[in-house]
Image 1 (cartoon, rainbow, N blue to C red):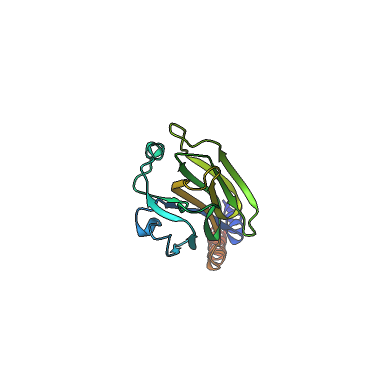
Image 2 (image 1 turned 120 degrees about the vertical axis):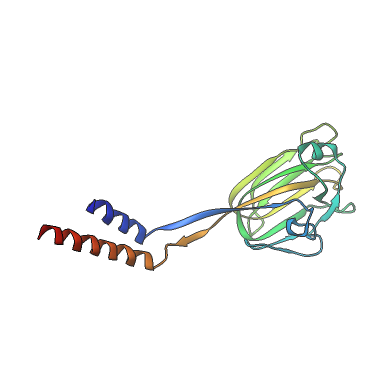
Length: 194
């Protein structure tokens, strides 16, 4: 018992806890990104920005994959990619995607714009799958996507953002508590011997 208590106290005095947090964006309410087209979204994890369009869609493949209501998309007149940016590190992003013409490329980028992970589907025409897909890696700071053919329609929805929250140190008082318990246990043990 004495050894177990001593080992537990020693482990607690150096412990940290890491927890994961997940946030879902579906563009259907202010809390889930409906205003991202004009206003960054401030969350408990950090701030999210988007340089594309939030709009409704009737894409049957997106609907079959679970999309309801609004989606995150490329502006109709855009010819380049759109970007969903985070001011915090993300470890994985899961999404569904759609498009009625062309293809889609989705990339997870680091803070310097380097590609961490990528997904491409050459054809998003009618009848093609719409996900879900997951991109993973350490230090993801942006999700960027484009319609690789027409540049006009490449919608994402139900974007699930997962992050490892920074290690939380064990409170400084916990080792003191452990030390007090050890002393109390030692005192009781000494009393029994006499």
